[in-house]
Image (cartoon, rainbow, N blue to C red; front, top):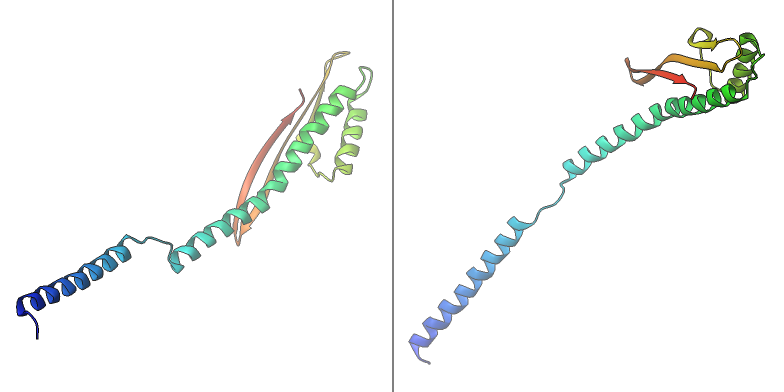
Length: 144
């Protein structure tokens, strides 16, 4: 039929191509890297916990930043002859408009005669996270 030597070389060549093709397929599969379903679920859970943490904690910081602005404005707008009680009433009215609730014992107003007024607000905020786990935040807001 044909030359037996050429037929054997053709068989070797074809089988060599098959084994080479099979080797490249195996190599490609081992080079592929990706995220498994378990890995994707793990990272999704981490992302959900981080977002939940930020959603629970950020309102407290937003209130703190608003409080600092209110304290600065109150210090700048208070007149030298104004009493500490009047300054406290004005400050509480501003805090109520901003819907910020601070215990009155945390508000300190220092007034040195006709000099500038110094308002300091110190308070703790407990943010419940999960179940019986809470986060304690301590805030100190002072004017200027």
